[in-house]
Image (cartoon, rainbow, N blue to C red; front, top):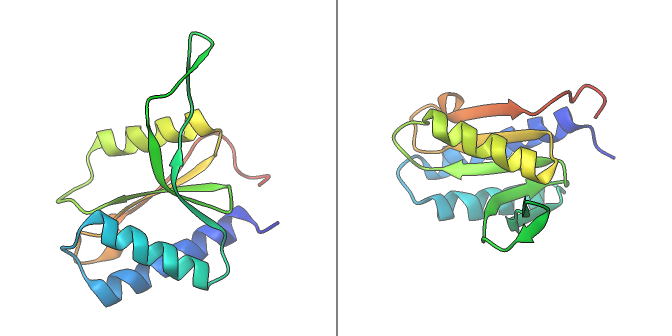
Length: 130
């Protein structure tokens, strides 16, 4: 099994390549498709539009929440193409992490001049043993 930090590093490298080629200003769906393609070409196992289970009062509810990408069953990627990341975007990703049991998430906003400013790494709990 690949180490989670190595996977995260590979994902970020792929995101930089996509941003370098496409630049800012496109729709989220364009970045999502290109990032998925780039990660697959690097040998990563990628799932897109993964359903997020919602259990409320002991019942599983079908509410249609989906995460953009899940990589190697261990990292959620939430793609944005917006003016600025707000606290609610980070809260959304943390909620997805909690609901799925996945510990690491990357929130990537491609609508920036320098992609470094658009990447946010969020951790739920301890990932030192992953």
